[in-house]
Length: 259
Image 1 (cartoon, helix red, strand yellow):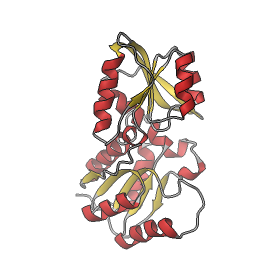
Image 2 (cartoon, helix red, strand yellow; image 1 turned 45 degrees about the horizontal axis):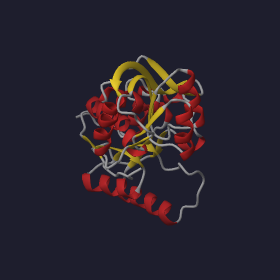
Image 3 (tube, rainbow, N blue to C red; image 1 turned 60 degrees about the horizontal axis):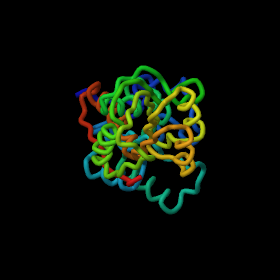
């Protein structure tokens, strides 16, 4: 096992995901958000930085935590209440926090959308959902019964305590052009993009009510597979890669939200 510090591991992940070349939401603050003192002994992967994830990390001996939604997601805030509780728990357990948002989503090898397509047996042939200079979603073509695709998505989501919802699906309906944008992937912008690309089935994590209304008028079926469930794959993939690179164990810290 190679001895590695949180700073060195963070630099490796920054290079792996090309973090410096990605614009993101200001509060995402990609990269190492909290350092620690001890060498990395065990890597943990979680979707969200939460007390559940922190306590689970501490119980498992994790001292380097990789998350998709990090410490500062809601912006500038006083260090009181749950913010204080999270920080105190991390410092007491000497756990480092590395957070990566859109640089992870847009990665061809480790992105949530790309990995979900692979999990569903869908061949990626194009990109989808542009943000700045990068695309955070994927797309492709095929010919599959839409109901079968819904069943496959539901089987995946159930592993993460999530119930799939869809706009209406006709018994004879088939998916021939699809796109995936995980997390909060249904928006007016992604629906317009899907319609322009003649996508007939859009798989997302979640979206506002109006997207279901608009979808019917765009001849588009939306499969809402859950924000949490659809963003579990990327953090697991980079944790596994980092663990293999440095010869340390890793694990996924299960903390579903049901959404």
